[in-house]
Length: 331
Image (tube, rainbow, N blue to C red; front, side):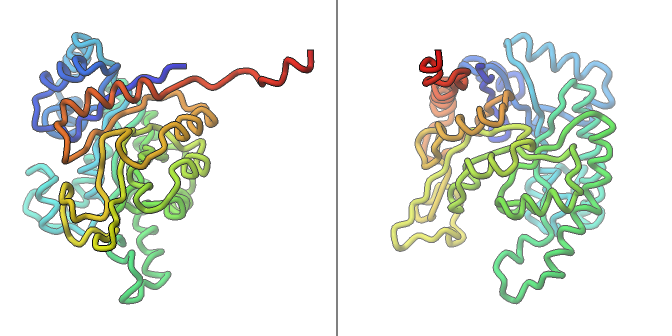
């Protein structure tokens, strides 16, 4: 078993899709995970231009690239979030509109439904993304975050996401939430509560990304073992804690790349994530999907890093054993 190694284009949306495909192939990747921003994958064009999907497939084939998933994190974020001026930086002008928060939430809901339809038309059965969260700001329980307040956040998840997931189900497409700070699910316990709030419906699972767990002190392997049938897609991404007595895990309002932060992302293999144990855990649950590199490291040239990460991941993956080594003693 050799899992395909793909490159997520979300951090490369400044490059045209054709350039991105060319570079991805040159870096040595088997495929590409297309972000639904920049010009990498246009949901509305996929639905309304009868030639778009065929042309996109031709582009991928020309570069000998496979595609197993598309990703619409930015619009998904707008489904549950309480909208403010930050969202204008991540949403299209069409989705932002006049800036009315409730209207933006509704447009994000409809766009996520359309993302499922576009994925089906494109021949893809996994959409990765975010859900947003109306209660992330209550993570620290002061002023007191009562249980009814927290439950209301999960109730809103069900109210807004169940209609979206109905469309995913109709299209035969699964939604894979990237468990992540600022989402309704950001660790193992909130992931379990999220599944329960949605009635454990089969269309909803996870895009496993260890980088968002490791700095919180969560063992990524335990996440895989907690949700063996819900790992729909995997990101290879690394992070490191740089706590030195002055830095803090909440990062002091310092942006990524600032050395005063208490943690930051690293190119795969250069952080704290134990990827070998992750591969063993993925083998245990019989995950055969792609290993998709979400490359992010403010201290490294991204083209050098993306090429290195591809080689690292190819060297990392291995098939499980199909024998017990002491079985020979039974003969």
